[in-house]
Length: 214
Ligand code: HEC
Image (cartoon, rainbow, N blue to C red; front, side):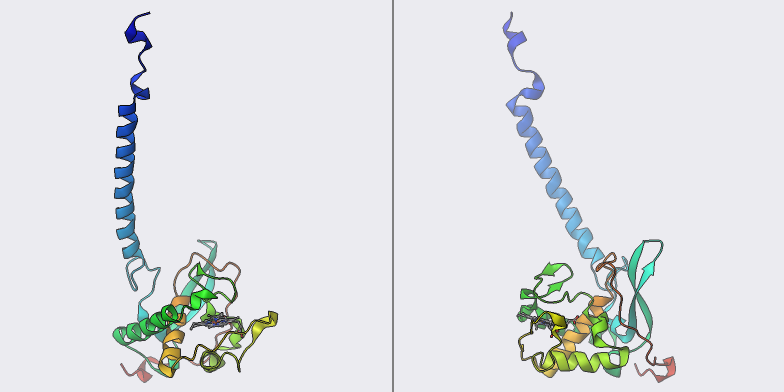
């Protein structure tokens, strides 16, 4: 037997696998960078993907209806039913939603709640909280949400869990911001999550276009 016959084949050499490891790491790093930029485009509010609505969606009625093509429920954007009865420009709506988002982050609401798949399961998922049938009906919702978020202890519902939300002592502006954030979030296309969710009935008055003051 000659020495050439016993030497390892090319694919078993250390050098080959080192090159493979370097190539795979570099390639996957590139994929990660591309996916990161792609995600930024897809999650842009009002962006082309259509999955995350513009902030001014809070001026409209938001539904959650079954789409037979996709075989799950998707958010629908209906007629004008402005939040707190006031039609906001995209810029003002963005400021309000952002105020709510920052409040939710600063107060660590995710310690108990889940938001868009992140967070805890102690308390109800907030992703579609705006559409929760627990608010009764479209006309009562804003008032009940304001009362609840202003004083969740006095206005607790608990839903038979015996769990009460502690009072986060939000200011009036923070409460309005949080409600705007929850309304905007309910219009995000979450691929049908939560599955089998039935939104509260919404058949209240809508604004005619001529009543809108921009
Ligand atoms: C210590 C845990 C805890 C924290 C922190 C917490 N919550 Fe809650 N939250 C609860 C519980 C428990 C409920 C259900 C009880 C109830 O409705 O009375 C609830 C209910 C809610 C609801 C009603 C959800 C629905 O669909 O009915 C909203 C909205 C809400 N919380 C918002 C917030 C916001 C905003 C924050 C942060 C400022 C927050 N929560 C922080 C425990 C918590």
